[in-house]
Image 1 (cartoon, rainbow, N blue to C red):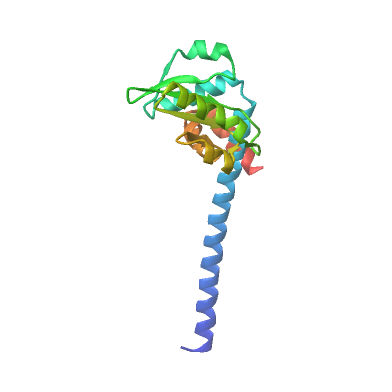
Image 2 (cartoon, rainbow, N blue to C red; image 1 turned 135 degrees about the vertical axis):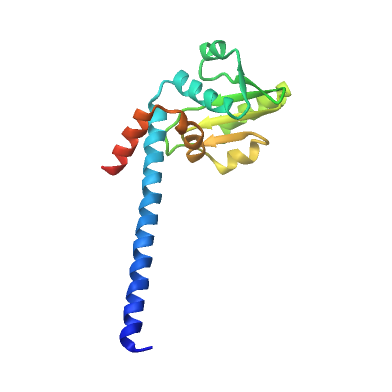
Length: 171
C-alpha cells in the first residue's frame, strides 16, 4: 500500500473514531446533566408530592399503597406501608441534596422496622446516595437513590418538566 493511501486511511479512521467518541461523550454528559437537573427538581418538591410520585412509580412494579394519606399526615419520619406479592413492605422517602450521602443512622431505622414488623422487605428512595457502609447494614432493603431514583420516577413526570430539563442541559 502506498504511503499516501496509508495516511488517508489513518486520517479517515482517526476522524471516524473522533466523531464517534465526541457524539458518545456528549450523549453521556447530557444524560448525566439531565439526571442531575431532574434530581434537583425532585429535591425541590414538597415531601408529600415527592412521596406520592415514588409510590406511583412503585405501583408499576407491583406495590400497592396501604393508607397512603394517613401515612403522609404522620410526616417524613414515618414509613409507608405497601403490599407486594401478598406481603407488607415498608417505604421510606428521604429527600436530600443530590450530592448528600445518607449515613447508617438514616438507613438503619428502616432496616430495623422491617425486621421488627416481619415485613417482606423495605424500600428507601432518595435523590441523594446511600453510603456503602449504610448498604452493608441495610440487609435486604431495596434502594432507589440518585440515577436509580431518576430512572424510576423520571418517566412519570410531566412532559413539560422533561422539556425544561432538556432546555436546561443545552444551556
